[in-house]
Length: 332
Ligand SMILES: *Cc1c(COP(=O)(O)O)cnc(C)c1O
Image (cartoon, rainbow, N blue to C red; front, side, top):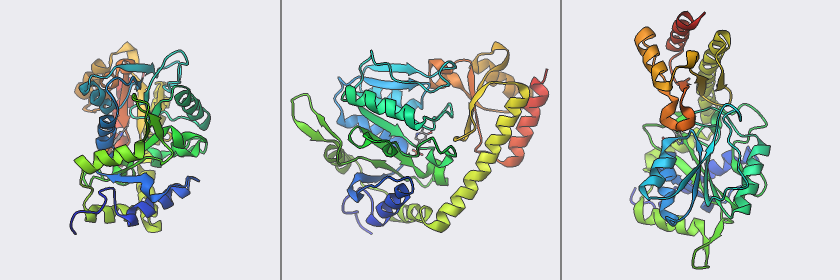
C-alpha cells in the first residue's frame, strides 16, 4: 500500500464506524469521520486551527492534554470546577464566556458521566457563546446507563457546535496499535475574526493533510474488525471483565465507607482520600504500607487534591488482592 488518498482513513473503516454510530441513532456521512492514530493526538492537535485569542474552558480535574496543549500556545484557560458538590460533573456558568469547551464523558479521571439533560445544557451554552465543544468520548464503550449518551450527537443541536473524539485504546486495547477517530460534522461552521464563514471540517482537513499521513493499512484493518459483530462480541466480553473489576473496587469502597464517583459507566473509581490525607500522602501511604499504586488526583487539577484514582484495567487476581489489602489497612 502506498500513501492513502485522503489521509483521513479508508472507506471500509469509515463505513464500519458509521455503522457503529447507527446503533446510537446517530447518522454520519463518511467525510465527517477522520481516522487518526488515537484521541490524544487530536485532542492536542485540534488547537492548531483556532486563534490563540480564543478563550478555552476546561473542566477541572481533567485529562492533562487539554490544559497542556493550550498552554503551549499561550491561550487563556478558564476552569469549570468539578467537585464533591456537583458530583464531579461541572455545569456551565452563564455569566462566563468561552470559545472552546473541552468535555470528557465518561470522565477521566472522575468516572462521572453526563446525562442527556446535562449535555443539552452544555450545547445550549455553546450556542449562546458561539463556542465549539470538543467532546472526548474515549470511554463510551463503558457506558451502561441508558440515560448517558455514547455520542454527543445523540443530543439535538450538537452537530453544529461539537467535534467528537474517540479512540480504540480503551474500547479494544489499541493503546499500542494506535487508532482513533474524530468526527467533524459538515454542519459545523464558525465566523472567523475577519468575518468569513469557515467550515471546521475543511480547515481541519487542511491541517491534517499538512501534518499527518494517516494510519497504517494493517492497523485500519484491525480497527475495522473491532466493529464487526464478532469483534464487538469479543471486546464487550473484555470490557465486562474490567467492569467486574470496577464493581469489586466500588464494593470495597462501599464497605470501607469511602466516598467515590465512577465505577459505573467507567473503568475508574475516583475516591476521597481517607483521614483528610492529601492525594500524594495517600499515594505514599498505599505504596509503602500495602504496595498498591493508584493515581494522585492532584495531578489532574486543583479540584483533584484530596482525591485519588483507582483503575479497573488490571488482572482480576491482583484487583482482588489489592482490595483485600486496602480493607485490612483502612478498616476501622
Ligand atoms: C486514554 C485517553 C484518550 C486517548 O488515548 P489514545 O490512546 O491517544 O487514543 C483520550 N482521552 C482520554 C480522556 C483518555 O483517557
